[in-house]
Image 1 (cartoon, rainbow, N blue to C red):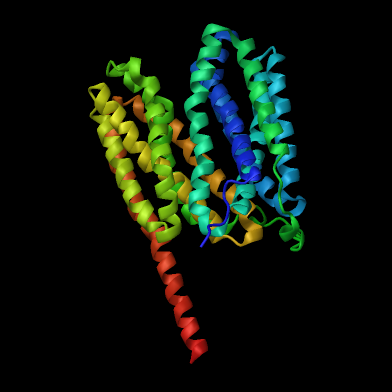
Image 2 (image 1 turned 90 degrees about the horizontal axis):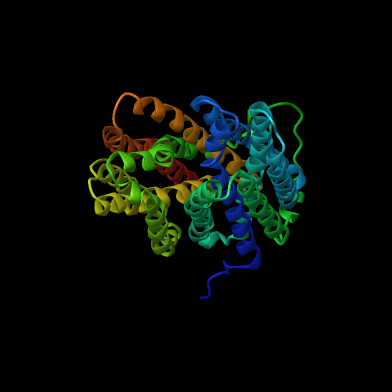
Length: 403
């Protein structure tokens, strides 16, 4: 029996658009705090607002975008968002004050939040149901590749050629996201046949309830992932491994590339529990190895374990969020999941920063390894037990009907 086709032109195009979108994000993520300190003589907290303001606007815009997806259609929302995102990238050349720059970051975050929500909803419709775990895994791979290349490109640009070249690169990459997004073909008929009328403000208008439990699990574990994004290079320098710190996410990505064809297919064949429980354990082991690292081998081995663990968990959680929702609610489910997940990233960067002031990074990552294991309990109560109860209820209902 032939498998339904996954690698269509539209699937490749939306994956490329997502890659360019996140590449712009990561190019600027690691460089704008440096730029704020050098150009505007900002202190560390003001420089940190470059990321905080961006993420807050993305978090706020996602539920609004999720609602708009139901009304206007996925392609229209995606292109509008990418135009805002590309336009905001052009504005970085002009502000003369830190306030002006933060206003642009606010606008840029709106475009990013809307675009990532629309892209997630579009890809959920493009992927055949029988290959959703596999397809979402490959789609999320585009984000992981951007995470590896973005910091390298951004730091090289600002250190070697200056901020103007950095902003030119971000504009080119953002336009790449728009151009590849234009070639995506979306079937809007399914959504058009289900008109949505919202008479008043309601929580359900902006959040998909079915996605919230798994999003909370993702948010909980994202706090530890934020600790990696923010401080792993600082930790590497602290343990005299600064020369290999840039390889951490390279190894992370390589392991993802190798494992992705298997983990995605296993998710489709055997369900999420077979993937999630081992992946949480691998994530915890990776954090423990990182905390004990004293050599390049152990440091990079931890990167591989974390890549196999967390790198598998994120697309699995997003797939669960989409599968739990009705077809016309997939956009809202994507928005709900990503908004709550981003709260974990933003909260993690702040909380872990406070914790790092009280202890060394080795101790911090050691505690994180045990924190990650709590995720097993959280996942069980918020998803596994709930699913088991639902199946039992459906079985009882079916037996009652048959009798």
